[in-house]
Image (cartoon, rainbow, N blue to C red):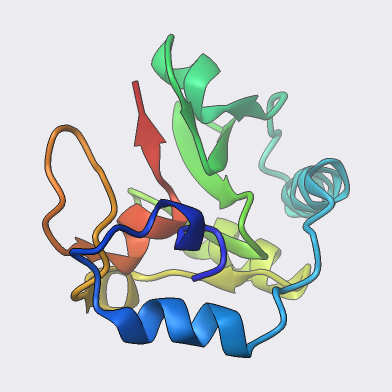
Length: 141
């Protein structure tokens, strides 16, 4: 929540803002260390990861809250910059186990699909409720 609080507008439920004011922000994420940890875990699992690239570099424009790590035969996974969260589109059990063993929380389809209501975050011209996956792995051009 702390990542999105500065952008909260009056359309958001005020309880989101109160939560931010009443709680300490999470520790700042050491993104470089996190990416090293993820890459090392994938390497140890025999998945031959490539160099992590930012969401903006991966999409060829914009910016976001994740990095993409390509590995194996054209597979990709995403590592969030908001905390130790990771996911992929292939539900690769080997990659999941590798990252979970390295301390990451794997965001599966069910968890990623949870809608966060009344948090007015701009996303491609709209401020509709977003799901957990979109908020953790956010990209905007």
